[in-house]
Length: 99
Image (cartoon, rainbow, N blue to C red; front, side, top):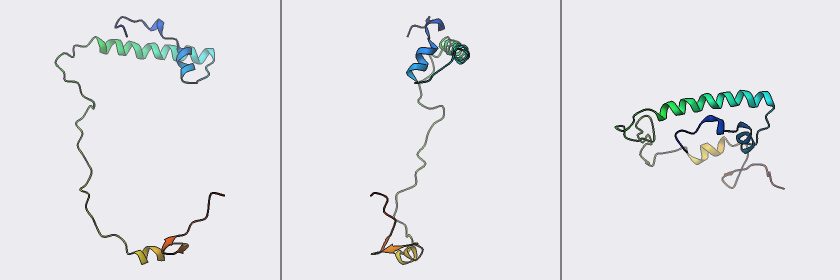
């Protein structure tokens, strides 16, 4: 994409067609103005000097928040099955949903 590309080359109706959106004339006019406004901001960002800034994939550093995968005691099988509305062969019994 050329840095000097103007917004007049962006066809809102074509983009709406790609997005499978049906627009009337008033909606297309509103969206055209909004798209041009967004593209003006993109152009302003392109003009910034970012030569000394290292590219990142996130605005803030990410850390792994997962806990250690360790075996822990769970509920007793009998206690769980006692709370089941319907059970059979040591398993939860559920209604058949496929005919």
